[in-house]
Amino acid sequence: METTRYFVPNISCGHCVKAIQKELNELAGVASVEGDPGMKMIKVEWEAPATEDNLRATLKEINYPSAD
Image 1 (cartoon, helix red, strand yellow):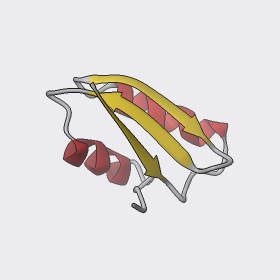
Image 2 (cartoon, helix red, strand yellow):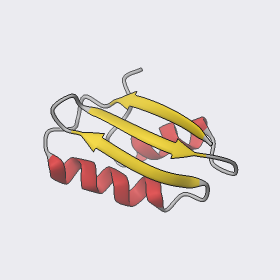
Image 3 (spheres, rainbow, N blue to C red):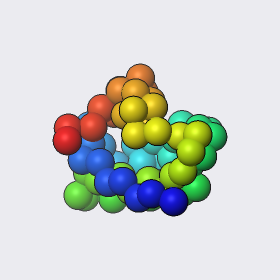
Image 4 (spheres, helix red, strand yellow):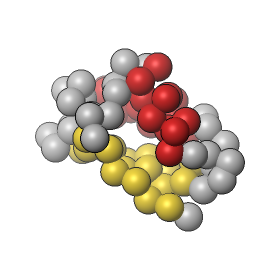
């Protein structure tokens, strides 16, 4: 299991975090998604078949691209 943190500047509230959680949790291999709207951070625990590339692609697709 890997843990990756993303800085997502578009996060402005808890609703943003919920939207990100909903989308990322649908990816196979994603175990958990936590977010902090104040820090604009998302923490994802994942394993194969998920990849960092498809996590980033999904964030970009839903208009919450990672800035790191």
